[in-house]
Length: 399
Image: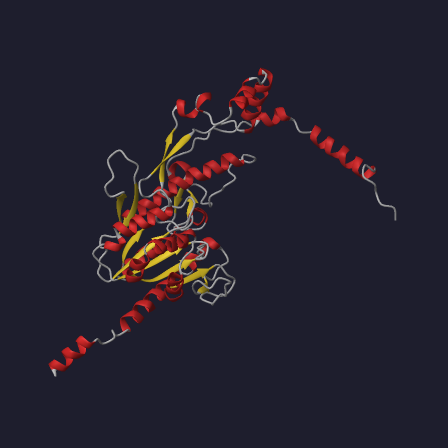
């Protein structure tokens, strides 16, 4: 059978069909679909949403779940609307931590001046004075803040699965003190001034020759470029500059700061960590920097689908050995809950979280993690101290 040569009838037919399709696209009509202003409500009521008695986000009038594609063919606008709602959700969770969980907000750095950028964490009233046990919660990376596991779950499913509130409430019921980290709150955004947004040519890093070539671009070409930019991005967002928070400029730095200033000074003999996703990497980095202190104070660590890597993070042999004995990672898996899961990197035991969805691992392993903590504490309390010569001598003298 003869093969079709390049440029044959089939390819010509495809080219004709493509030209016909392109000819039907009216750019003027597309331009008429102006993007609505990127201005959104700043309250749940303004969005016409509220959480029902089951902790589910529902429309006040229709009772329907949140709809992402509120306006067809305007993905960027829909995304900005979703992000605006997410910021309101963050504030709502903060309120729940204070009002429903009775946690107090503590600002960081502890010696911050009135004018400098600040972060904050949440802790129970007895976090520093509880002599028995303390639970520390670390969320993952991204947009989540203190009290959240996954914004997507809060918006699309419910507060129980997406927030740390069930952990906090049960921990307090079982006599734990609680500290909730806020490891993604690393900077504040300040709007750029005109001089910052439009630097002078002399301050540019570009070579002088390149600047001269830009300045020689014909006015018609610049006009076309401006028109294209307006079409591509009709609403330029405000330009901001990030001002980092002292000693809390990254998740890892934040964890070390909270350890040094709070956890290490807490009265609890037994400290327990729950760390999700990137929070697991943050814990490993904390242990690399404070190995001896961690070993003396932390009983066990529950990780949920942690993304840590003890080899890439260059954790030493003694840390890896401690993690094998004192950590457990509940990973996303199709296996039943708590089923052992093999790994190419045997850094610590891995078991199934009972779900294949990464963001759900903390919620699905909830009961197993509290059981893990309880068993570890019982085992520690059953261990009898090894008799010393002095204690034997005292016993002999008593006899």
